Image (cartoon, rainbow, N blue to C red; front, side, top):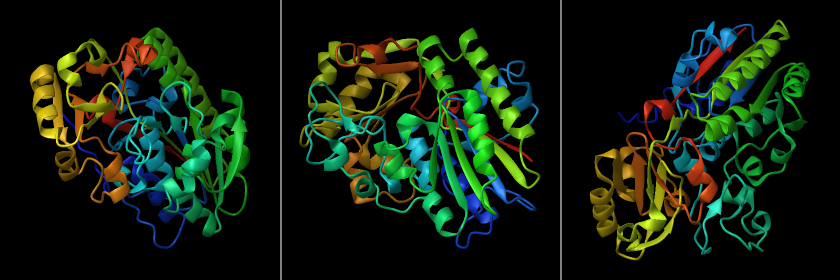
Length: 380
């Protein structure tokens, strides 16, 4: 069953604008109906890869988080970190912020771009994309964090040091102060310290190791459950240290599934015909085709992949609203001519070009409930 993003109703893109509305920032929409009565400080703790279904299946590993009543949000499409963090930070659907996937075609560049690394995909890259594709120009719309800062709210972002000046942070998470953290304890301390700044404060704290564990060991592994235990402890520690006028909101950027069937693009000649480049990621592929070949590629891929995958043209996915009600011209140019999503536990991999990604157990990106639904857990 595919889950359509609920932009403007209950999506991750609605979270920060709803918080800002609750903190009395003019012009913001509280689409989530958050009750921030008496609240002047909010910490948003984003746990990469903690899907709603995965969390619900591990109550013993996460007793604190499981004690909170979840509101279920959808993430945007594709259900992947670069897109979701951009939606969180900008307060916009992907069709507006333009970070529409893991590997993107960018007009004027022959190779695909990876927004998480802000570099071209492939060896021998000598181009400094931070200068050639300036993040603030690539995504020029002011972020929700910038709007909060302009309204007099003390904004802090607590995350690993490499994210401080990264292209993705500059594009979609810019605004306020950046506080690097070096451990889970340091994350909790940094978040609580930042939360006490100013008369009103907003803190965004990011944890990524649960997602990494799910990719490598699988989201149903003992290692994943043990990492979730650490996440639960950090969330409880932050909750116990909250000032009296503060709220903690724990959420995630996507869920994850274990892949059991792999279709190897690099070994399937019938899939290569008419294809100029293959972007996205294994469960949500952007297929960039030769001129005029999109319909033929769509038909051939659907026949080759069968019922386990949905194969759509760019116009179809835009009409479906997967990228949001508005898709800018720049965002449209980055979407594949054909978009392929997994409907079950399959993935389209590239063993020659992406060997490490091909070997991973856990993946995300598609529109299944396991990938699209994330919890929003509030503690005050």
